[in-house]
Image 1 (spheres, rainbow, N blue to C red):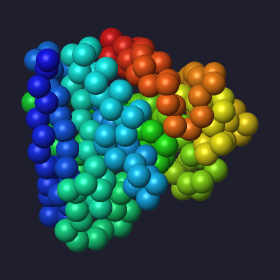
Image 2: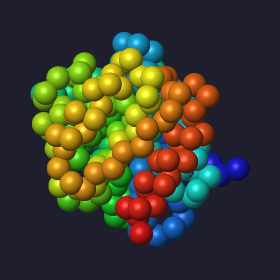
Image 3: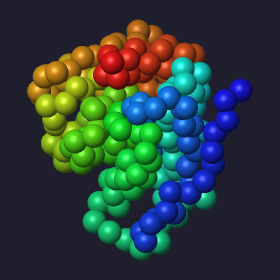
Image 4: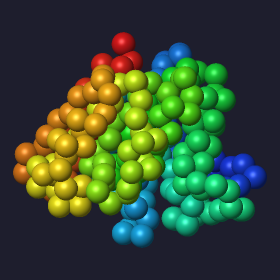
Length: 212
């Protein structure tokens, strides 16, 4: 069993509970995995996040997951503009400070997709993003605008999703510039219970396209 390191990503603004698996491979891309909305029980131990994290570890891919402030043992020390976006940036800075990590792929689920993908242009070392059930209709135009990029974009959508409304997905998807790609998970609603392995395998497939 490969071991992970549990610790805190800390700066003057936040102390974020995190878990990192670091591959022994040199100069390999890392994946930053972001969880759903805290107000609805989202944590870094969510079923989808955990399935992705476990699969990345099994594939020997460096990965980091964390709790947003106010979740678990994560907390805000002092406020700043766009706190949640800034928390993602803090985790990216942490990863990029590590010598063996040269690039990062963002992988967000639901709220984590909206917030995480909004940081895609924060650094040239961010390869692109994977958005799972991006809640376009709930999060507003701000996150759609911030997540626009000429970097690769991969979307995963359940065809029975009533939160990230499946009927509206294609309309929002067409707003994004190329390159982009999507996968529809037939039978899956927003919570992907019973589809965790399929989600994880799809994430690995997208990762491999970018990491080579």
